[in-house]
Amino acid sequence: MPAQVDIPEKTVQGIDHHVLERENCPPSPTSLDGKIAVVTGGARGIGEATVRLLVKNGAKVVIADVNDSLGLELATSLASSATFVHCDVSLEEDIENLINSTIARYGQIDILVNNAGVFGNQSKRKSIMDFDAGEFDKIMSINVRGMALGIKHASRVMTNRGYGSIINMASVAGVMGGFGPHAYTASKHAIVGLTKNTACELGRYGIRVNCISPFGVATPMLVNGLRGADEEEEDCVMNFGVPSEEEVEKNEEFVRGIANLKGTTLRANDIAEAALYLASDGAQYVSGHNLVVDGGVTTGSKLLGYN
Ligand SMILES: NC(=O)c1ccc[n+]([C@@H]2O[C@H](COP(=O)([O-])OP(=O)(O)OC[C@H]3O[C@@H](n4cnc5c(N)ncnc54)[C@H](O)[C@@H]3O)[C@@H](O)[C@H]2O)c1
Image (tube, helix red, strand yellow):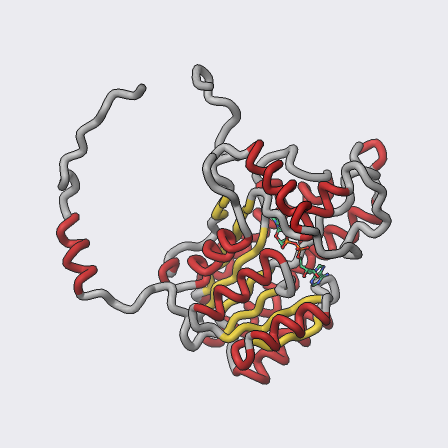
């Protein structure tokens, strides 16, 4: 048992000021009223949760995805707060069309969530000795080139207003090795580098660039990725169905088993909350940051001397 520590009620000077400030509470810094956001890969999973949370906090959101049926369904369910644009992020003409059509409709872009990404197949290309160059290029073209193209075209319009928040979806696989296939891991490390470098350049225009590194969330991507560990799956990119409740529970159980933080389950909404923070003016001085949402799993391995 750790020794009991008595924490005096007021130990920190200035705590009363916080109380006073709260009484004259300014509007929440996470309010996105009047803001226009674009979310790639927004039709399902982490992207969908992000779209919903940004809308809930006042933003108008453009959902960009290759999955037209899910994207349209989501946009329709959010009525005038969202629209859908077909966009394959690996194609520059699609990205240009996404940004141009958003400007034509809303006149501005305040937030870009570069979320679209693919995992690749675990089973067939597990060993680097079986490295598949074609699959590597495909994954890099979506996960890295797609994000670079998004930053390119969004920043061009954001510079006009001297304001913008760009959020790239990285991963714990971009922090440490061992969390995914080689191509995926390489791509996620590249996203962290791209984030830092573009933050260095774009800060002068008032544009912030950050990334988020989630641990395992039982989305279709993760379920399929882990399913691929013992099943054959031809299409590494996206040709798989919606996971059953049983599969989601099995994946959440698996993640809880290797998690550092116990007593809770990481869900897509936790990642959306991180995106909301980075998108908002509450993070107005945060740029070049990798916001790791992993319950501490990448901070170290076992703590010696503890069970
Ligand atoms: N689920 C996790 O455990 C996890 C962990 C860390 C990072 N991530 C990252 O989060 C992001 C979202 O993943 P998810 O788990 O929600 O996956 P998901 O497969 O459930 O959703 C991804 C979405 O991206 C879309 N998409 C795929 N290729 C695209 C393309 N070329 N152009 C546009 N859209 C495309 C898909 O149609 C889908 O709607 C990815 O970048 C992923 O690498 C996920």
